[in-house]
Every structure is written in C-alpha cells, then in structure tokens.
Amino acid sequence: MPSEEHAAEDRNKDQDLYCPSAQPDMSGAVVFGVVAGTAHEPHVRYLDQMVPVTPEVTDLAQPVEPAEVFRIGAPCAGSSCRHFDGARCSLAQRITRILPPDAGGLPACRLRPRCRWWQEQGEDACHRCPLIVTLQHHASPDVVEVARPPDESPF
Ligand code: SF4
Image (cartoon, rainbow, N blue to C red; front, side, top):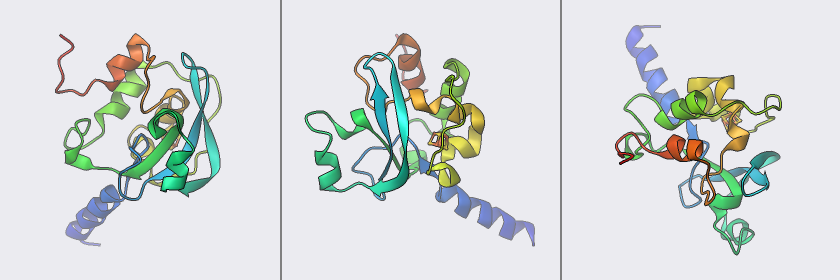
C-alpha cells in the first residue's frame, strides 16, 4: 500500500480513539467502569458491557456528579483537550510516570480496543487505570500532579 494511504489510515485510526476519562456530556459517551473502594483509595470495577450515557444513567449517580462514580469513554477531543500535546495524551504519560501500578492484573476492560491510553502506553496505563477517578475531591498529591495539564503552572 502506498505510504500516503498508510498515513491516511493511521489518521483515521487516531480519530477513532476514545478518551477513557471522558465527561458524560461528550458525544458518543459510554460508561465502562464504576468507581468502588473508598474516597481516599478508589478502585474502578470494569463492566462486562459498555453502557451508552443517557439521562437515566446519569441520574443513577445522584446526588454526586456522574464523573465521580462512573468511568466514561468518549471519542478523544484531540487538540481541543488541554491534555493533548499535539500527538499524544499527556495525561496518560503522567499517569504511567507518576502513579505506582495497581496490585491487580490487567483489567478486563471493554474499552481497550479503542482506548487512547492503551494505544499509547500499553499495559503500563492499564495497570494504573483502576486508580483513576475523573472527578475526585480527595485526590492525593500525586493524583493532583497527574491531573495538572502541561499549560497550568503549579505555582
Ligand atoms: S487504560 Fe487500559 S484499563 Fe484503562 S480504559 Fe484504557 S484499555 Fe481500559
């Protein structure tokens, strides 16, 4: 196949990738995990089936926000996201660099075939993914550092 076609195929694949820490109002959003554990030591449980985000699903989160209790995937916003560095997800890079791996095995995750973190960081991302809560009020200093976009100064 000519290299131009390869490049076009790669671009299309890239556009199909999902963010695994998305917001419920993003187009195409699906729930693929539920936050269990405790406020200070959350641990995501992965669903057997992904569930499209609907008003009925978001209502299940009340009285808290859906992103506090659900892990949601949605098509990656690319350059519209502060974590995207123009080529890759900087959030996934910080997760694998800063957080220790979870003690469990590779999560049985339905989002994996289309997950950007998996695509870019492989199992290193998956071994830390259960520790991630998209909207967390009691985040550890490490998680606060992970969540800080590259354009945001810590000072
Ligand atoms: S990083 Fe791994 S476990 Fe987390 S959503 Fe992506 S494929 Fe699933």
